[in-house]
Image (cartoon, rainbow, N blue to C red; front, side, top):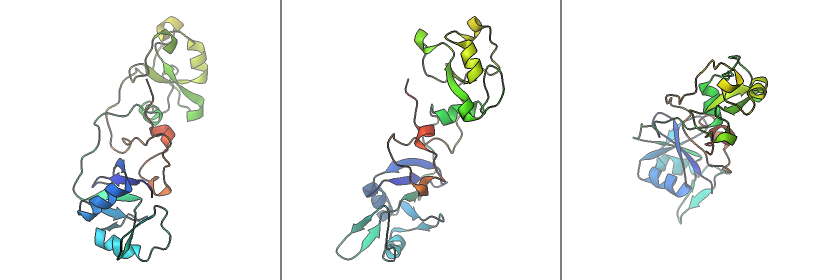
Length: 198
């Protein structure tokens, strides 16, 4: 049986739970199962619907009297807060924060033409933090080399900074966890949402 994506009442992804936790929340009327069309089902409604589902990719919980499909997504009945008020330090969020623009030449590029640049080079003790990482196009990155912008005589068009938090891209999916097709409308790929190590 698989993991279950948990949404808050406003349909923001906030957590990935075990199937046991998801069924327990539904049984206690603290969450609803969500189908592919974002229709909500109480525990009893989902139990009745489960009798008609022939193949459920997330598996079933069986009792003596009935089976219940393990939903892939649940929505909490009362919780409308959001996780962490701080933006996760992820590739996706860095690209989003700088709007795919090189901080040295100011031009906008596709993601494959940009990379993450340490303002104070990593080889010289620079950390992987919001304050020391910016986007750089490949040519500017080559020009800067293993120097600071001032040492390289390069002006920064955008100063490094931690962004203010915006809902919708806060969840972090564990490395190696399969992002299910039913989750795609709520979360992005693991590569873009996994936190970058210091």
